[in-house]
Amino acid sequence: MSHSHKTMEERVNKSIEVLKSDLNTVRAGRANPALLDKVMVDYYGSPTPLKNLSTITVPDPRTLMITPFDPKSIGGIEKAINVADIGIAPTNDGKNIRLAVPQLTEERRKELTKTTKKMGEEVKVAVRNLRRDANEALKKQQKDGELTEDDLKEELEKVTKTTEKAIKSIDDIIAAKDKEIMEV
Image 1 (cartoon, rainbow, N blue to C red):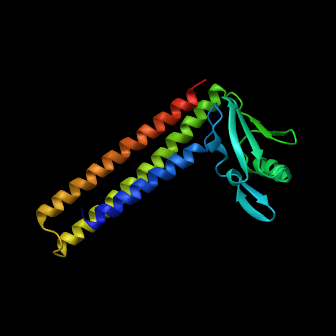
Image 2 (image 1 turned 60 degrees about the horizontal axis):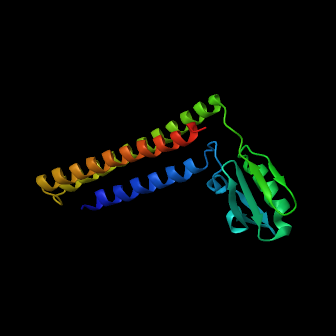
Image 3 (image 1 turned 120 degrees about the vertical axis):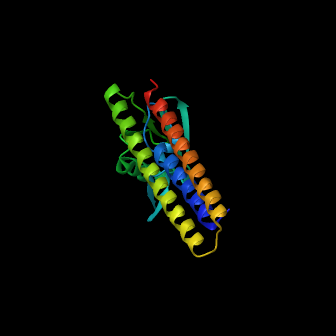
């Protein structure tokens, strides 16, 4: 495997991982602790990920429950959730914070699937750019005498296969997320 193809493959995989992580923060109709992945709490002056300060459980499909390890941090956690703008108001009973995940309207669901489609398209564009860069690098290597004509053909084929596999993977990931969004 040439250096160009290997680098491309690593970057493609990284792009897909980023897409998955970004999609986790798109709210579907059911409670998913990943919604809170990017919430940062001001804990004694340092921004700390919420998941490092609490246990997050799903007592039922529509509720997220956050139990702080340090009861004194509950106010800061509540504030951080409000600031994170995930679209769900937290309720605080002094010990736990609950988030009641609202049922999504049909309209909101359609909006969200448009968002996920756009996210998928952006990653596909990135993958196609990586394909172009890898192909250009390979052609240059061949021109510089580092690859034979046959090597070049073989490497270009690998790049094409990696691209096709990535595009299919992106489509599958988006389809699964849309299914989750459309679930009532």
